[in-house]
Length: 255
Image (cartoon, rainbow, N blue to C red; front, side, top):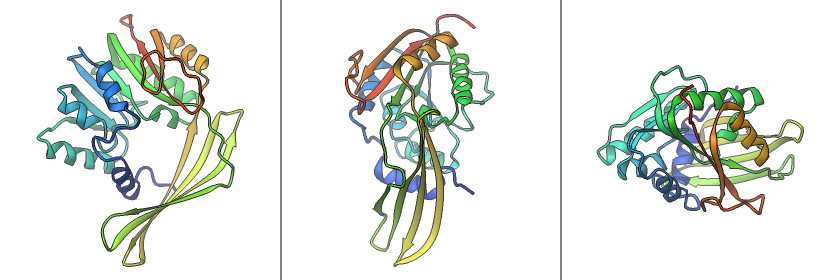
């Protein structure tokens, strides 16, 4: 029934978050925290390459993984445009069976929050630990809870060219305070010369975490040297629920 980051979603994402577009300084922050890492770095949820391509251009050994073929196609084209041909993996990263390991793993833009259940989150953290070399670094963003009104609809218009564009309707369906999730429907309509030619319906379940809760989850898997930072200022304590929080953790043992 639902599309999973299909062609219309990909088009809107790339229009609104093109390659190199920094969200509140996140690209610079991640580049700074990766300084000195010369081995392979895995970006999870690489999308169309918004952060991935700039990090490649700065000399980092980047590999990307995403479940969306459409997103990866654009990422590949963007990389080729600047003379790169990076390794891009189309798979569910939480169960990806690869045996390669990485010196660092990054998960920007709160992609981790898209895992809808506690079981998936636990499995994902174990997977992250497995994929890191001893001493490897994990950096990921989390969004704190927000308070949308159930039934609220937000519509936006995204112009492709003089004759075509995409409208996007976001509708909040449910907020589950016990399960810590917000469910949203995203309906994409593509129009050419005023005629509707394509539609996509996407369900997005966003899960949030308390800061202490998430630190305990990281520790339970085995991560050490855990820090958190607000709004891309390293180790600055968050003071507002509207801030983006970035966790950093390290795998110490060879396990």
